Image 1 (cartoon, one colour):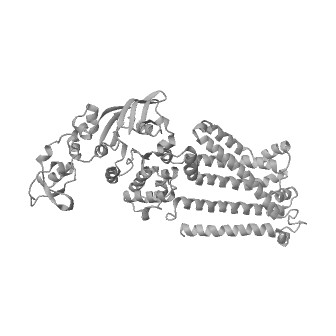
Image 2: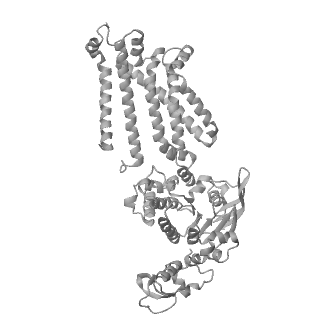
Image 3: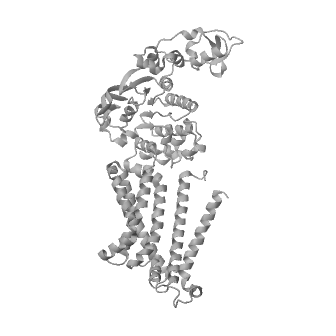
Length: 254
Length: 320
């Protein structure tokens, strides 16, 4: 099979997974008979306290907000340490960001919750810290991988530092930066589920409740939707990267 | 056009350029040649302020360059480097339009200028305008690089080892191209190179640098016939100085009147004499018929005639 055919197949798969995600979120209550058959001992085999559509949206909202903050901070920091004024800070930044990644998110939640209360705020802090490393690393890698000859040409032709950044450095670094954002977002979709342990409303809520109440069906239901969300999002990023690659390398090469 | 007055430059206290004074004449091709570390590239970069000098003055068209806003200064100077300096995410047309865009030219004017330059550089606009750099050969990329440098009709063209990454054949054709463009527009051009043949071929004025200072400067023929010291002699290649002298002159300058000789080879009047010498040897003949444009017989060139070195000023009749 040619690469083109594989890519076409992958694009169809996005629709499949997107459809499954919507179907499971909307239609979960209708699966009562299925889960009843699978877990006959459970009195309430489907999680119904909050609708899965509701959980899905608040999960997505938490991930989007934390990822936007991670990207803004991450790219900003990477821009700073790749300018002449900030080069000296690069090792420090890389170390600090790597340390953020070594904290287990549960530990951050456990420390943050008593300090700033329960709910979405401690979850946001944990997710932002946790999502930072891939963004910072990929942004630094992307920005430093731009061919120095190209940058020198841009400078020598008379582009201002801002023009060089906007029209040359960022567009050329974008594919690498996007790869980092993809990792960060995908990780955070999984991590956000844990945030339910401090009271944030996410797709992790049925999982946490299921675990504490020995209701395996709830755990499975939450896990299925989170998994589908992660896969669908990852595929959307794949599509975005392909688009980007095409716009840089033009059509003939693909 | 460009005037260096006692210019010095040092990195971390170590001098790389010391007390350099030189003059780039308007409308001429000046070539600075030297081995790596001679400061030749730094000299070029001080002109468009990619490197700042520490002492002395550099004048551009009579104005001190430090007094001109740096981006404005660079837009007035064309800058061409090795072929990998093209913007890989921009089409050929967008690359060439870079400086006109910075200067906020009108869209139509930019499009016309792009096509005109592609035409001049032998790249058909319809075919190449929308290509991406990676779809071009090395030579074509270099042509686009030169077009980009010339796009906004700069007052001077700075070329930093422009053909260093090209194979010898493409390199030779790009050198011809530069001379042709120079004849066409009469631009002031500064070329940095470490290749003596390239330097001799391109230069109206040749500057030989070593350890941040000028060792000798003058017309190529002058440097070949009167090398200042052993360093210069080594640099221009002791053993084939004679051949290099021949390469600076054309058949036309050594032609003698005479009827067409049947059985002897034919050579065009604009061919360099080193090639004529090679023909004498390979054809085992001491006379060649000289033809001009349209294959008209002009006269003869003889083997012994090559020995005449003309007065220094009559160099190939090329110049500006």
